[in-house]
Length: 130
Ligand code: SF4
Image (cartoon, rainbow, N blue to C red):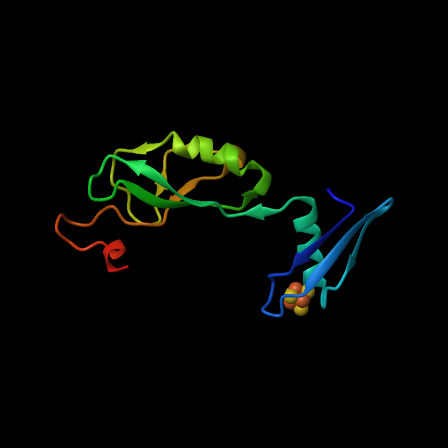
């Protein structure tokens, strides 16, 4: 970690700009308006975590890629490792929204479907409305 980082807190709409300074005996946090912000800033400084949202390949011509997300937050620094694994998946069965794809991910995370491959042929996809 750098000696100091400035983080915008997203725990509430106020969006405080928080400075985290690394010192010999730990971290000093400045600019937070409440304890939640301090916790958030320390998490972001030490090990930022994110839910990974992406798509996987499918064999279905009507939906060649299916939106998915990880079932839990993953370390931001491991995103490329996760993407390598996810990019190796080709979905061959239709899985409903909220279902899980058989794909081993590090740390016990699972891959959850956030789109819907079950639509009937000829039915408009919600993607076509954009
Ligand atoms: S530090 Fe507290 S008040 Fe400021 S944005 Fe974060 S949660 Fe909101």
